[in-house]
Length: 465
Image (cartoon, rainbow, N blue to C red; front, side, top):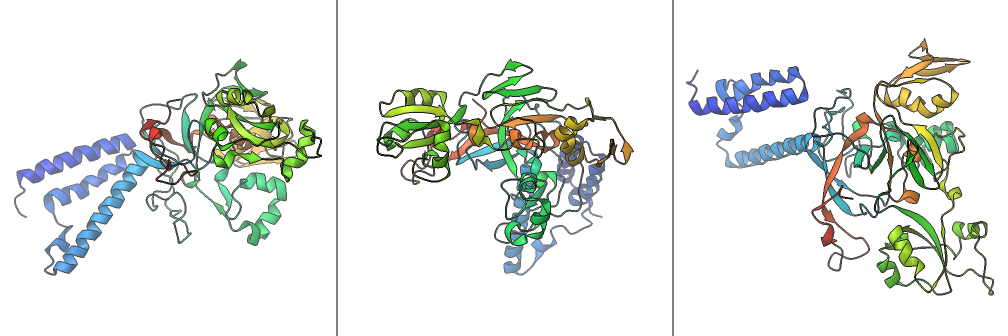
């Protein structure tokens, strides 16, 4: 064996300390076995790790150089994506005007502590599906349980949070909106599973491979939450509303349509400028909302538009606006829990208690409707109701104690957000991270050379408002 040089020892010590710190952070002593590999790489060199560099064929050496660089880059990106931060694009308008469609974010994994992946063998920079090929981007084995390592903080009320979609455990690949459970309530399980032409294959996804959602954390573990006439109450106290909170309004003009300049002044995107008085579903509902036809037997132009309070005040000052009505609750659709009649609606919801780790509930009919998904789907228990008995993991039970904390997430664009009001609680193991910065923002209403880049949003803090 060749004499080990001082430089080798220095490199080995540095690598060993870094690896030991990583193992300590991961709280996994098994990782210390990696020292065996480090000893050989830096000291003994029994395995020819870089033998390809000695190839006499320059083409082979050049090709293998590229392979080596690509593999290193993929591993580095994979580790950064898992434990430090990931990129996320805002796909929908549920948080407008706080976060806009076309915002690209850095999402910090360190803010709440990164999770050890449930599915460690997966292709970097993909969520659950490989582009082009359309197949799974991960292997089901090995599968690890939930574990979160130490971060710089914890989820706080009003944080904007990225999380895995809780109801995304089971997915009909051709109809992913609404979610599988809502779809099952609407058309029945038998049809979904038998009609592959319409619904596609039904697949299960582990927690870390469910679609990423981004919403604002409204309710914390142990809170009692209710919504009355669109105002959120936490423990019977009215919650301070987000700065950019908005609702849908029906705006009737005096006869002329709203101009592009007015829409731009109100900061209303093209996608949100919905004229509802020119036929279709919304036109049929107008009489029930109190709108009447003019002397010509037709409706004046009526729009359905999301407005912040600031934009609403501007709208009221326009001389060509006749009346403004907030969107009726009836258009909100069915809310959580699916299939159980509570009398709750999108704008008048609860009160509902948010589960807290260590808290115990009685297993009555109502609690089973509200919390059965937590017991079964999120905490991994079997749950059966046999006549008047409740069986958890095959044993009779009258109470249940939660092992996880849960959160209540809602969008700031309240009438255009599929959030906890529709699919319930977000378990702690579904929390991904905290958006920290917008690094790019693209406006789809303009081309790239004419306002397509929102320069005023670049390098702006994402959780500022």
